[in-house]
Length: 606
Image (cartoon, rainbow, N blue to C red):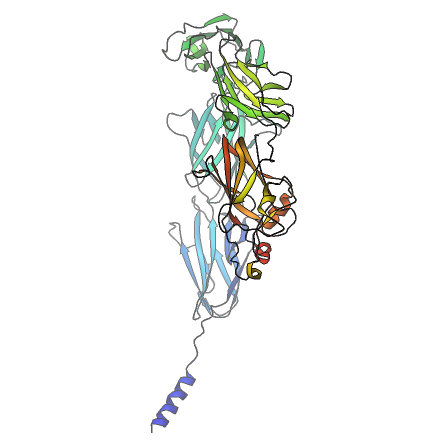
């Protein structure tokens, strides 16, 4: 009896349909009867579609449906029309064709809807068609901020700004969603460089740009174009008013100055600054002190036929700036509606600052090595005038110094002498009242003959033919090799870092750089990261930091025979250097060879 029940249960299970856990298959393709460019269908990604149509479009969209199951159609409207404007030919089907009948848009508002086609299998899949139908014309309405110098006339589609240089943030509204706003010349060849940084933020609904002063004598215009798929380009105009203060010509000490009229900083010496205004009205000018807002007592203005000559005596007032404001306006009160042109300027006081390169500073002087130098930077200078000078008080036969745009550049011959040679360098301002002197020492190239090296920990063994001493033998084509072949290499756990070496110079040495070379003869075991420590007693160590040699074997091979040179922030004076290999590049070339190498170690004064 039990056996019969079991057989009956198995037969019943065999007749149940098996559930299908594979997602349904669905693909759709949209086409439409778009005449006279009144619409466009496009693939929106992931099998979805987008359709942009003009308001005049009233017709059918044909959709081809490829599905392995039956499917349904649902429509969601995103805008608030009173009637539904999309009618599907099917709301449920197993066929391959769907038609969406769309009514023409007679509303002044754009409208948007999405049509979703979804399969009816065990794991349904849906694809969406997003349809946007605009109003009668694409529209942009600009909304300038209150109390700004800009305005918008919707009849002429003109956004107007004032003649002065200004930053503009203009709010706007559009009746379409996808569009591009661009600024362009109104006529071919027109200059629109007076419009800077034109940028549209759709998220904040703002248009931002800046304008330069318009002293051309007439207003100037540019086009703002609105472009959207399926529509003709709509043109708006950006117009900048003209100032009556036109054609400003500026000269400083007789030299033409063509930049925009704005704040300028001058040196401390005496200046004569001339401004010429080509205007149809008589102008007046005031020189004000920005600190007191009153007439400036430290300068004067000479006026003749709308030409204003600003006289600035040398500023020898210690550490006080002369901060002025030149205000120019029409003498006739009938032009009071036009704000004055204001030009700010600063005249520096007498000053000289010299900042020497820290890596070459030692005690009270600068040091350099014995190699030849060409345009080596010793530091920077800052002064209120351009006529800063440099001179070598001694040692002029083996070096010279040039000042180039705030940089102090050294040229020096190679030196091989046994004792350092010195010179005194002086930097001074035009009248010599401010100066700075520093001693410069040049040392010969460092000699390795008195050096020695030893292992710094018990991991740092070496093979018989590639001893530790190869690291300081002066030959980059020899190298140290880790003693990897203990027990035939079976017990090695590569990389067995850190490997440490203690280099003894025999006596304290001055240096600001360390140079390392990878092995030049092997093709594995390249070093990745190293660390340097220094000491004068071989007991207390100062850490100089961790440095990268190579990222990979390919990097090391490409680097070739060039050294890896590390410049320290300050000059070191020490007897011992602890060289620590922290890691190897760890790629397949290294792991296959189970090895570690170091080519050469050197120090120098850069």
